[in-house]
Amino acid sequence: MRGSKLDKTMLEAKVFDYIQTFTAKNGFAPAIRDICKGCDVKSTATVYYVINSLCDKGLLRKPGKNMRRAVGLVSASVVAPSLGNKDNGNGIFAIDNYEDFYALPSNYFFGDDIYIFTAADDSMKASGIQCGDKVIMRRETDTNCEDGDIVIALIEGVALIRHIYFPDEHCTLKADDESLSDDTMYGLDIILGKVIGVMRNFE
Image (cartoon, rainbow, N blue to C red; front, side, top):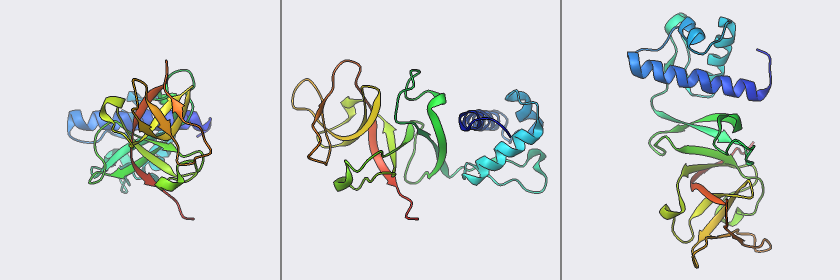
């Protein structure tokens, strides 16, 4: 399968969404040719490639020997897209800002509004968030946040991980790193959601 990483990620999202919708409607998984038709993909080899990639990520059950209609959703998982840390102009949650997908255990995480951002620095290290960590966020507004909660906010088009406080009518964002100045939210700055977990690779 040729093309950019973005093309590959967007096709994975399209195929996975089709499999979810088809399975919910019909009670069984789609055949490979159903996926080709539903996702406007001409090559069955491309669909096989995408399915194998989704299986490797834990989003689908590994097909058996009969791959014609053997793909299945991993029901015990919640699928969370990993997003880039900058708004590309179409909105931070736009599908072309998806970088990858992760399967999270549904006994810990639930709902449709779960996303993952990659920590860009060590500014929240005292709270257990280090550079490179995958930070799990549930989409929320500031009305569902309390003083001291760790949130991800979009400040001047960049997603930042910070503590939130409400000293007056404006929200104030503070990092653990005291050398960094506080951010006060104005205008187009928004709270994207509340941090609910962190993943780290020790290798």
